[in-house]
Length: 243
Image 1 (tube, helix red, strand yellow):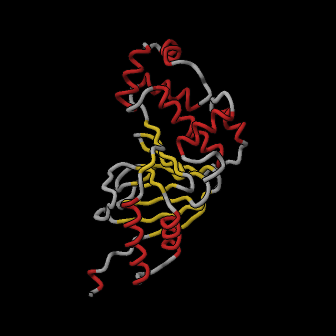
Image 2 (tube, rainbow, N blue to C red):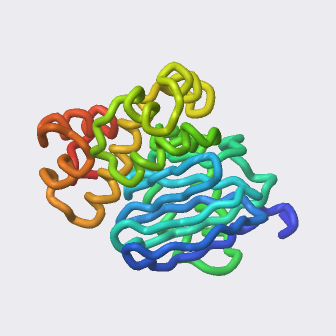
Image 3 (cartoon, helix red, strand yellow):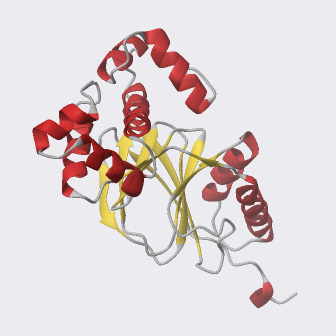
């Protein structure tokens, strides 16, 4: 077989990001897999924010402007794939489950260099595993309407804010009915569902910084640690502090 018929080797990067650091908005000409072996990685676009702890990976399609932020120390593994290689068929970012095999393949692949038969075989396994990886709902959609965006901004600043949608509406000059309609139209979910997603994302960020579970529960708006643990387990399949 001639070299021109081989599967092309995907460019890779392996780097560390300090806790709290980030990468300014940018875009790539290739599809990318972002995997943080430690910490929690956030990718934000105009459409929302996606979070990936060490049991997840982020898929970022070519041409999508995005920025990164690290929560906890990040050991970041990046793999670029040409636009012709899109095993997921996705045009927007997504969070993917990373099982033990896919994790080891990503780490091994990014540690290799050069165009070798072994590396090409490993890439084939990686693509196959990506096709099998289920998507995870760790996305927080962003509002476009200025009134709903104002409510979202208040909750980003204080996830524990327990005001109702009607109370927020009275502050910003919009009816509860209008805001509720905007939630469904722009966020694709109800206000309580969006607030829970926000709180869960903030919880992941705080846990990555080694804050105690009780502190995280309080800062994110849960009445008790047990209530927080129950919601967290149902969302992620494990208790806080386990991955």
